[in-house]
Length: 129
Image (cartoon, rainbow, N blue to C red; front, side):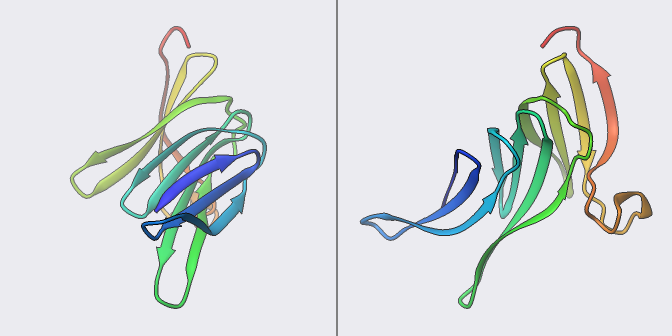
């Protein structure tokens, strides 16, 4: 599969050896500047609307791109990346003012609004964008 951002759409394509066929999409807020993939998880950074965390589900009956959570702070994202430490998956986002934030997805936490909100675990200013 291939994940592509075009305009305000995040599109998952399937390749059958001959052509790419769009199989799922998600309407993004404004403008996607970065996409990262680990297994069936997708991290997307928006130029003004922060980080968005998705799960790709591909079964015989359905192909779904589901938003698990997002950052509700309006970060002007420049870059994102997954941080993998054993079985722990964290999400890193940097913004235009030189800030770096590490997020966690924890749907069991009451602070995450039933899993809709990415939880900020660490934030620091690196000095320059």
